[in-house]
Amino acid sequence: MNTPFDITGKIALVTGANRGIGKAIVKSLVAHGAKKVYAAVRTLASAQPLVEALGDSVHPLEMDLSKPDTIAAAATVATDVDLVINNAGVLTQTNALSSKVFDNLAYEFDVNVFGLIRVAQAFAPILKANGGGAFAQISSVASIKSFPGIDTYSASKAASYSITQGLRESLKEQGTIVLSVHPGPIATDMAAQAGMLEGTEPPAVVSEGIVAALKAGDVHLFPDALAQQFWDAYKGYAVPMVEG
Ligand SMILES: NC(=O)c1ccc[n+]([C@@H]2O[C@H](COP(=O)([O-])OP(=O)(O)OC[C@H]3O[C@@H](n4cnc5c(N)ncnc54)[C@H](OP(=O)(O)O)[C@@H]3O)[C@@H](O)[C@H]2O)c1
Image (cartoon, rainbow, N blue to C red; front, side, top):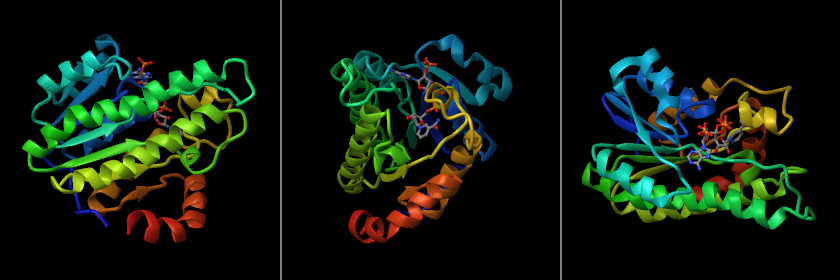
C-alpha cells in the first residue's frame, strides 16, 4: 500500500500531455480538482487545444524526454509540483532479429527508460521540497510480457517498470509515493501505429484509473479489461514480492 494521495488542490506535471493518454490525464486531473497542471510537451503549440478546453489551470511547458536540457529547464519553472506523471513514450515495431534492432532499441530506451530517469532525477528534489507528493510512471502490460513484433518496446517497458520499482524504494525516504501504471490496448495514435484497432478502450479508462489508484494508495494499476486479466494472473507474485 501507498499513502493515499488525493488530487484535489494539487499541482501536477504530465509528460506527453498533448495527445493520447497524456491528454486524458490532464483532463482527469483538472476534473478532479487539481489546482494547476503543467502540460509538458515537445511543441508548445500542441498544448493549445488543452488550454482552450480547460482554461488557466493548464500551463504548457516545453519538455523533450530525449533532451536533458529541456527537462532541466522545465524543472526551474515547475518548482511547485506535488505530482509528476511520466506518460510520454514511443513504440517501434521491431523484433530482435530485425536489422534495425539496435537503433530502435536505443531510441525506445532513450525516451522510455532514460527519459523516465531524467524526469525522476530532475523532479525528485522538487517533490521532496514540496512535502513528498507522488510520482506515477506509465509503463504497459508489455512490462511483464513481451508481445510479438514489438520486442524492443516490450524490453523498454520492462526496464521502465524495473526502474519504477527502484524509484519506489529510493523515494520512500523523502515521502514520495510511486504508482506503476500498466495499460493494455488503449485507443490512441500509438495503438493504431501498432495495428491494435480492435479491443481498445478509451484513454479516460487510464486517466480516471490513475486518480482512483492514487486516492486508494495502490502501488500498481492495470486499468483496462485486458490489463486486469494480466493483474489477475500476476498479483499473486507482485503483491508479496514487488509491493511487499
Ligand atoms: N496506447 C496504448 O495502447 C498503450 C498501452 C500501454 C502503454 N502505453 C503507454 O502510454 C503512454 C502514452 O501513450 P499513447 O498511447 O498516448 O501514445 P501516443 O498517442 O503516441 O502519444 C505519445 C505522447 O508521447 C510524446 N512523446 C513522444 N516522444 C517524446 C519525447 N521524446 N519527449 C517528450 N514527449 C514525447 C508525444 O508527443 P508528440 O505529440 O510531440 O509526438 C505524445 O504526446 C506511453 O508511455 C505508452 O508506451 C500505451
